[in-house]
Image 1 (cartoon, rainbow, N blue to C red):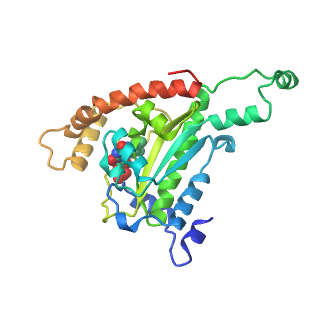
Image 2 (cartoon, protein in one colour):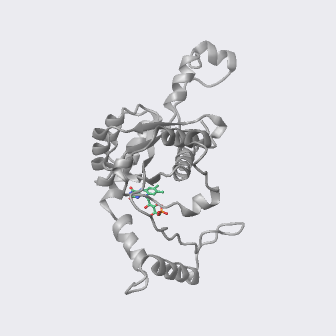
Image 3 (spheres, protein in one colour):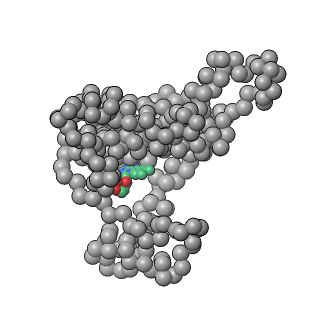
Length: 271
Ligand SMILES: Cc1cc2nc3c(=O)[nH]c(=O)nc-3n(C[C@H](O)[C@H](O)[C@H](O)COP(=O)(O)O)c2cc1C
């Protein structure tokens, strides 16, 4: 279904650049407003139209509406109660299991097949497959984000879905050769949302990578302090904040622990 059809003729689909510029994360939802079937259809359609390496669609979208599941994810994703107050969540699972199943289904793993086609016997997905499949999943998620804005919904990524791998795997029934890279919570925003500042210093590098010199680092620090800490007492407060609250945080340690398990799951090792 096209977004126009999904939302009816009276809902204007805004200009893409304006939507991208206006978008900002939504963490508080108008709970009684809910999400209509037409909005869900438009968002899921847009996700499925995202570019995909070889059009292999190496991802699956878990569509979560049950309160019990949202409640559990709120705890598992580093205790973020807003997840339990969202009417809808989508988990974008990087998925090679579906291709292994297809290969098996049409006989690719049989000896006679390998002899006939001169190809290697069964191989598990590796890090190369992970690199492209992850891009598939995240691009689909971002298409969903922009489509959500177009149909009057707000959204927020939940990176912490990578954590607590054992419990998330069991909760969502994830088989080997999968891992949940991205999660979105979605719903009607409870209030108008001011844009979050996005720093631009040291972002675009002409032709080749350019490591920041001291002057560029100073400019970055000043830009960030002005944007995020307009009343910064000391230069560099934003960088210090990121170092203490994110870089050295327990949640990042847990995410790294879980990622090792998800990599094992991807290649098909027991854990
Ligand atoms: C990969 C990723 C993971 C994120 N995880 C969380 C999260 O767990 N909780 C949260 O409140 N926001 C999360 N966010 C939202 C960011 O904090 C937000 O995008 C950022 O502050 C910029 O603000 P904006 O989206 O309003 O422009 C995540 C965003 C991304 C891209």
